[in-house]
Length: 266
Image (cartoon, rainbow, N blue to C red; front, side, top):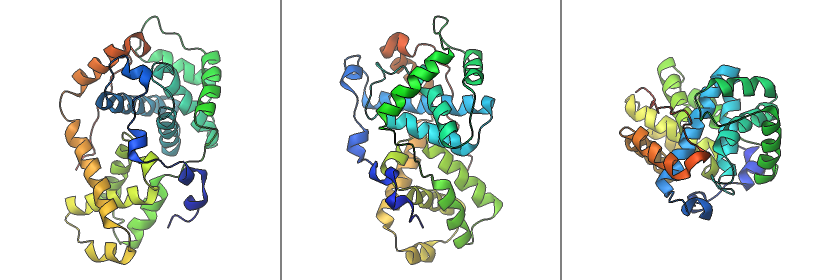
């Protein structure tokens, strides 16, 4: 189901949740809490998705870019690594890694089209400089396995690959990139959690199918709960909370475009 994953650098780079949920000391000095740290990373993921719609890259490229961004901030601070530079540069690097190259000048063009601080400057040289910093921050580990491939195979195996289930589970997987799940869990378990949620929402009896898989259902259910909790926690006052977090970082991320989370339509 995920044989190649187990021998990959992605598997070797998996972290415990406690290792991911660490606010860098420089960000702590500015009063950034863990909740705000997660919110800022979610906002950056939204920013990458938004920018990707302009440069027109495949969904896999966006997912890889978000993964790179999240890997960066397990090692570096938001204060040191300006999110306005990191987010688009991760998209630039991911496009190359996924063989779907985006020209730096095109990326810069669209970044300038998006609302930001008037004093903020982002040029081609900034992309190239930040690219090297990101590569160093992630130890040059560029391989990312995503839940999408497992999802398609699993839906077919469970005879759940109708349009309704496919769209719902695909949307759920997309939304997992607004969390740190890809840094903590094998991709096929994330896919299974999305199928589990969707089967409950669509009133599909998948009990026997899950039993045949012989996976640890406690892990699948825990991931499912984390996904559902995420939706619940970001339904209200997200913009207000985001503004508070951004204000603490000051000019580092001031006036970066606010993108509302739109939970998967049930």
